[in-house]
Picture: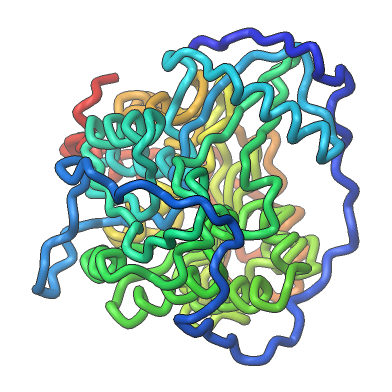
Length: 469
């Protein structure tokens, strides 16, 4: 994707300081979550909104009736348009200055060639390119950004289920607009992000007071419901918890990735804390980075942190820890599986985590061995990192197959033995490798056999996207 270069006169030239690290705390002891009554407080704004979505042909509602699950994965919220811009420096850290900076950008909308589908669209694209059927559940506005997003998702073979059932005529017009995220790239390729959700104490779509009926139907027809911490920027904690409850009632598996928001939710208000604890406890699969696992458990060793999250969960089957350039780890009740990353020339890491998650979903749905699932996920994430940007630029299957075929593992930077030896209670351990590994209780899985099995499955997998590589 090309980048527009901006030079706003009001922009501070000092880059954002690194966030201060606070000592992580364990989950607070929380009472049962309270449900919000239907008559809860409406947004304070008081400008009337013109008609509801009038482009009905663009939406594909789930089929009525029946118990079949036609959709492999449904994403909850976080449907946004990324506006990718090249700037001389990242936005200022001060809230007021940052807001003025963003408003200055919004005052002169850039050309559409700088727009890209963002948020959970990245996961949806990566999922479709692995041959899975995907739907996106969330709100998209009627303005040009919303129409752009619907066009892009439709071209990728992804259905959209809107959440405009509970319209609130007291909400101001911008409350119904498609979310924009300004993705700012400085000359050192560092990224900064701004959106209106960053400057509001309420969720962006606080007018959604309860889970719409169409959304519930879509969840019932999906095999997996995926949500992440960014959903809290759009929906109330009660709506998110209700979506998880709906999935469990329908026999739909729940994937949850707390992301960077996990730390702030852990120390947020009681409703946020309850909803976070609800998601962590009731998800079938948890996905998080090693830093995020540490912040939620106060345990530095990622294997032990994963084991703690698994112990706290009542339905949790897999805890997947992303280790960045080192690879990834999956913790289950019976085994710890470790897979090193693939050697690549990194171009852009945006969208790698979403691509990784798509492959975890593929492995989960196809009942693949843990080590094979991690190998595929590492390859899909790495393939995306070789391209520029996310959205429609996430990797196609041919790139993934190329990396698997080469099987060039980044083993010299991986310290599995140290992690395993530092774990006080480690069950059976499997490590993907080309070479033997010294260590107790380690089962070395040859990468050749894993790749051969994946190839036999993936080469017969047609991409559901109609967009060619």
